[in-house]
Image 1 (cartoon, rainbow, N blue to C red):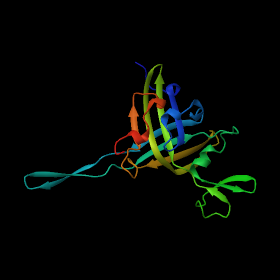
Image 2: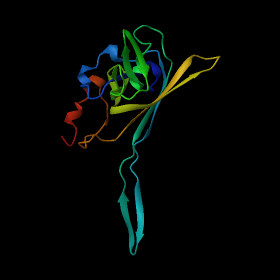
Image 3: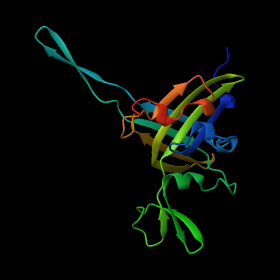
Length: 189
């Protein structure tokens, strides 16, 4: 029996709706994610007492929240990637900066952050356990830097259990990340 450990986990973060078969090794985040957690997605049923028993009222599934603790890297191709996920990207002259400006309201060329697909893949030889989340948007990117530790970000992404068409934004399977079906192949399509 093998436990899922950090040495057996691949984390992909790409544009929402990306075909799982298009995931490549260069999409894997290595060396800068310390931890991740998922919360939410509960389906609450409230029982209302009536004469003769109870009537169950099903409430909608709650929003899902993903949290990551990240150590940002100073490598040229990685230094801004977390900022680009959370903030509006602005080009001012020849300089690229990240701000909290609302996309479209800036006097410079600006692009707001796009929704993401996050795939957590555990692999042990030919055995896989993969969890995928679609249409997640960054709601928080907090910065922390203690004198006795590396700088870290705490990033939170939120998404609804389904998209506007009722298609699930969550799937899990005993498959490789690249073997998952397209999101458009899930129910309600």
